[in-house]
Image (cartoon, rainbow over all chains, first blue to last red; front, side, top):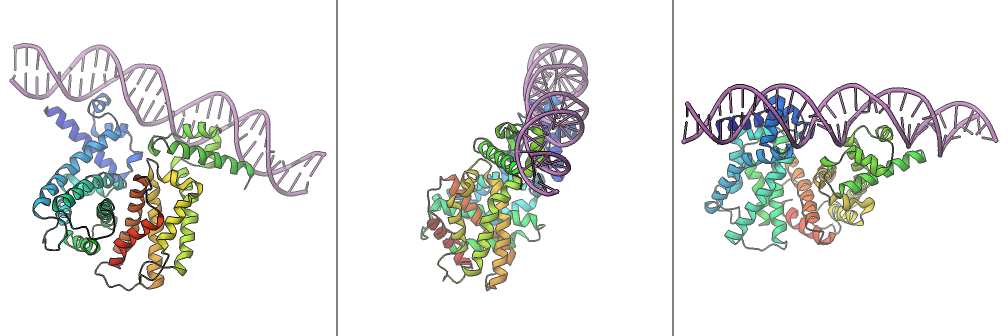
Length: 187
Length: 187
DNA sequence: ACGTTACAAAACATTCTGTTCGTTATTTAT
DNA sequence: ATAAATAACGAACAGAATGTTTTGTAACGT
């Protein structure tokens, strides 16, 4: 990729992130992003179709690594099922978050965090379904599998939201313990 | 309230709802609402400050009754705790939803359902906290109370989201059973 | 050094926003 | 029934944002 492209792309992401830190996604204008990134109007539209497109791209960059890393993790570590796994996939995910790569925590803590976490949940859903299929989790409970998958991914995302809104006062291991406490009993 | 006011207010809500049914909240313009409701521009701004304000008002009308009705319900029925209550607060809520008063299901099923459910979750959180305080729920589990409250309200909302996206293929009683299955074990 | 590609700058039509003001219609109180 | 109050209309307005286009310039990769 052209060095110039990378530079402007980075400048846009950076400006976008700075704006997200102090106002909601809906109230951010393309104009502000352009001004913040100090690029020409036409340049922005050469890179991104719309503001929504920019958001999608950013989400891709944000969650791409984390999710694929977690996907690898599922092969060796597994879900909570069985209760024997020392490091769950979720603990892995949480630790990844706290590394704060690409200032992911900053972005997730912003006013529009729901948008990001909604995107994150989709990836998470696929991930968990995969584990269910791969590991052939024993289906003892009386609820449909896709309800259960949704419940787990949903609960995880809601927990992260809670954690962020509360000022990140817990360590990943604590969070993992909480999550375990509400998920393990139903598997 | 003046008959004229009620009429225009109703026309705006109606037009807004119709628009929500076929496009996302973010892409709806005040102009479209005005045209749909067939009112003057100045009239709209006499009633609502902005589009966001209109949304807030609509949410108030939508959830006001349901939540206050559920609040009453908590005095006699209670949460799942104990497992003796035949009709839980959640079952009550779900049945209320299915009555589809004010076309609440239509609005919740739209592309922007997350916005509504996020609002709903706030009310729900307060409601559940209240029950926890009132009924002095025995705190046996190792997780903080506010985590648990968030987990319950979050799970409920995520379940409704799942139900709506899946085309409402379950009855309130089935849903309640599912929810019971994932919540009761952790109380 | 070359051709290619990205960027800047400016202008553009179009749309939306939120406000204002004078006029008309409806309601409410007398 | 009539008068005063209130709500809606309609038109117009400035300001801002969107997305596109064009032309010239600078940086890139080989």
